[in-house]
Image (tube, rainbow, N blue to C red; front, top):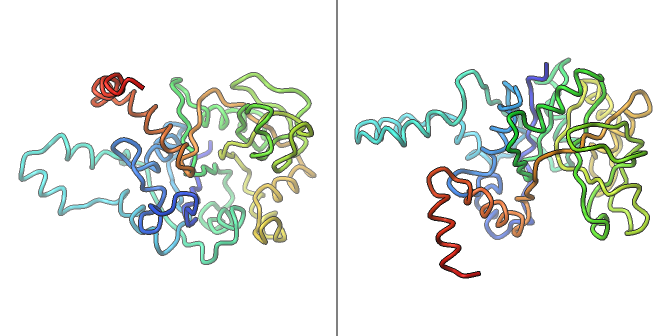
Length: 291
């Protein structure tokens, strides 16, 4: 069973400047909690028990958020604000551990994953990019279905979603013989980075969720620097394909790219409308605006 998940959070978040100049982009709030909490809870809902943050010196606030704050807890308790106390002490279940490791240089996603090699050990693991929120109303979320597929097929899983044909040049697109139905996987031949419109092998773009075998770490150690002079995870996945099958899992849920400003606004809108306490008032506000 997959129990470990790597979250690379060391990036500078240049797409979210100027806010990310002093606030980690992962800590920008979507309604009433930081974006990274949604990603961590997605992992926990899928059965993950250890969250591995690959972080940077400027991102201490992320680690602090998942730690206890006894001064704040004591203050809330003394003021009998037990509802707020419950919210901050139950961000994560007690059996979930959060550990961190530093990425000393910004050498790409593949390098960030490799930084967690000693913590992962010989276990297969998940990778979740914290820029992307995956909203899935199903009882079993997409990440859980990916994990089950990995355990059944022993094939690495790459989450994908369909995008409009005229936008394929903005994404990494998987090469597959046929498009699987939502919630299922198919063996893929490779990934084409930002293909020109009309040349893409499919319209299925890589989302930012991976289930990978431990051997990918050995491949990352051998992976030369690629695009952007960085160690690319997709290059290591291509090497893995020479030895065994890698599958594309077509998601059922909906994604929000919170690394971009418009994607963030979309996330605030969607999560705000469904918020258990604020949703009704938020809907009324939108009606008042008469947009």
